[in-house]
Amino acid sequence: MSRAVIICGSKIKDYEFVSSYFKEDDFFIYCDSGLMHEDRFLSRVDTSADLIVGDFDSHENPNRNVETIVLPTEKDDTDSVFAVKEAIKRGFTEMLLVGALGDRLDHGLVNVYVLMYLYDRNIKATIVDDFSEVCLIGNNKGYVTDNWPFFSLVAIAGEAKGVTIENAKYLLNDAVISPSYQYAVSNEPLKGKTAEISVKEGYLLLIKDRY
Image (cartoon, rainbow, N blue to C red; front, side, top):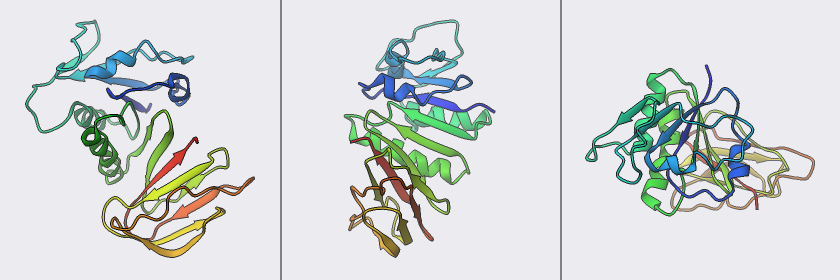
């Protein structure tokens, strides 16, 4: 099945970089003010909405001939979280979130934790913004090629134990990273090599930075 791309409402400046992640068979879900991005992507693929969801408190309902789910303003889930759950209902096993990180810290943090929600359901998920690519590592390995100048690891749910980093400037072997002491920031893959990260217990956020 094709991948669900969920377009959220945070600011995007580098549309060319973000849209370089899109594929021709992606299923595009636009969340409320995420619709402001629809015409801006400099992509060679069709990025028009396949599904629109939202309570339309930050963007007018376009009332187009596109499947649209209108949500109540007062609800437990944000528009983005609802879109993720809807994609799960439709059987998608891979998701890409864009416009998910921005000025609103609360919304950004919730979208980061969506990665854990999806990981626990065996759904591959990535967040991409102007500066970085973000994913979650648990019992799967993480890889960082040397075209990424920097990468960071962040413990987001209790201690991450048995953390090992290979082929990087700063190495770790069976280490512990805790939320109260985050020291695995701004590492660098070795030139000509791919850094490998593994964790035996817990979760790590892997953030690959462009600069």
